[in-house]
Image 1: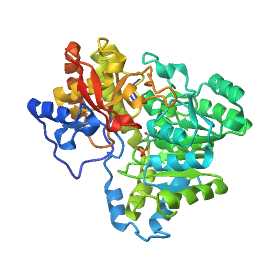
Image 2 (image 1 turned 60 degrees about the vertical axis):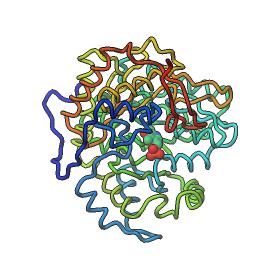
Image 3 (image 1 turned 120 degrees about the vertical axis):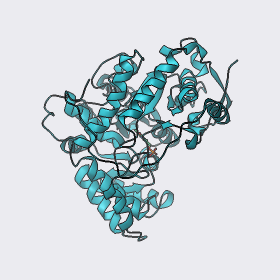
Image 4 (image 1 turned 45 degrees about the horizontal axis):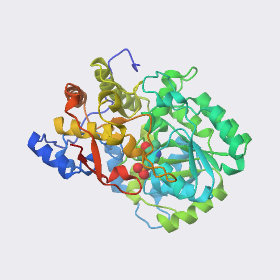
Length: 462
Ligand SMILES: *Cc1c(COP(=O)(O)O)cnc(C)c1O
């Protein structure tokens, strides 16, 4: 799906550059071994094109950098905090703001104030840190995403949708009083950056509110979701992404946001709520775990840059057009070469189907982890595993969660790389696919108990 029939260009010009360096094959062989075949453990200096994540890797604008200089570092009542409050209210429409150091800080607080032991928390596919905090608070996550989300071949335009039958079934089975809230993620990360439709969100909110269940968004990628609604859903073509983001949030009771994504800053996040009583409970947690209620986990300059980033992302539609357009450019190049990737191409990266490429590697030898390491070895391009390693183990049975999708993610930082970097990346992936039989499976040499994908170490299975 192409965003436009005309050529487009980035809506900015480059004022500062940061050199990058290509390594030799020998250097990369040593580096990946040293890193235990885990791309999270590589040194950034050993990476050529870094597509590990689009989290906190955005380039800030000159206006944001200027904001760093005028940030107010007052311990209490910082001017930059109030600038952030009004930016969140204007762009997202929430009145109560709880600033945190990043998204998981907000997830921690939300989970602790709403989830009781034995509760259920439905969601449209899991996100790693979100599910961790739900389970840490005593809840049990239940996936209620549509089946199409688990099918890499499905061209469904809204693979992030909630399956209302699954949600109804859960409510009937466990009772609405065991479900404090539904966690609705915009542009579902683990499904490949896939949006949900406004109609689906509206219907979900209706069902939940009729049953006294709160609707909490993971609005981390609401902007990218809004762009897809504008492109794909009837009635939204003439609306601005600013209007669409506001409407998305209007169906919810609050949101957690990692500002390291849409919001164009390198660190930060927030919990936003409507109910002042709930906000009071959140602030009590905030002062214990993050910081005073007018800075949470951020410095004044961070809040100033964030306030400006939030406004900037929706100032015109040109930013998100170029952002998603660059992802689609890389996706189209891979599709043309026959690389099996998740389609439609999502909002923040390309997701390569590792099981389809490496059928000779059993699922418990981590095909996507192995393919990520092989891509780095061949080219210096760094991606990330999104498969069985990321999914972790079942808390009750101790078995691996085996997700249907076993993916290598190439996430594109915002405003950082050029189309030429995308060309080089496409060539690198195509190169590895020429000899898939050279890639061998992996086994753990160290497995952390939770969020294991960040720090796990592996060795090749001989
Ligand atoms: C990144 C992310 C988070 C977690 O946020 P951090 O800032 O990394 O703590 C939560 N949900 C989604 C959808 C994300 O992409």
